[in-house]
Amino acid sequence: MIKRIHITLLVVLFTTTITAQEKPTENNSKWKKKGSISFLLNQSSFSNWISGGDNTVSGNLGINYDFNYTKDNLTWDNKLILAYGINNVKGNGTRKTDDRFEFNSLVGKKAKGNWSYSFFLNIKTQFSNGYDYTQTPKVKTSAFLAPGYVSFGPGMFWKKSDNFKINLAPITSKITLVSDEFSGKYGTDLGKNTRYEFGFNGSINYKTTVMENITMENILNVYSNYLDTPQNIDIDYQLSFVMQINKYLSTNLNLHTIIDDNASSKVQFKEVFGLGVNYIF
Image (cartoon, rainbow, N blue to C red):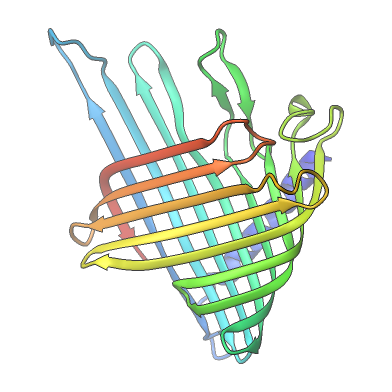
């Protein structure tokens, strides 16, 4: 069952991406496409250094791609966020430092003013296995689509521009996917590979230029499950700064906070900062 879901989601995403990247034609000239690829590399080496230190090499690759379509009273906004990072410390081997896959798609039909009727789809997961290294031996904590999150539903969409938009979806379905080895975790019942939730989903995307060559992007997503402890609101907040030095070099700061009782009783926080290559296309 899980394998079939894996293949279906990948086919849908691949088809959507290829369609969005087609060259504009007379009937397909309303696409706006913009994205960035960033690569951050850090390295340290020690030899006879009396203060001590371990040789390390780490790298982070990130892709942030928007492809939006507008025609008459119809809009179709898509966003793909990919991230992967590894770190190699002498004596500890190679470990994952970042791993993220997120795809957002939202169709809107004009209602009045900046408001539209909408339907959204959101898919979140990671690419490879994750481990808890605080335990010996290490314990596997995640894998591709384990967990995986699929959310969708109708709502109302407010869009001032591609850089400022809000979507409110009060009848959202959310499905959590896990493999057999994670059954009973991430909110699923033991022996089950899925968990269904029904509730309210709200999202805000705001991107602005703070000052010359410095851009900031905020992505906030909140969710409340009507069927189980609706007062425990899930929060997913991302804050990104890109400080462009020249055409290719930039300093990047990415902050990511997650509050989700089904995944962890603690607040999850991640920060990635570094100087690297940032290519805008």
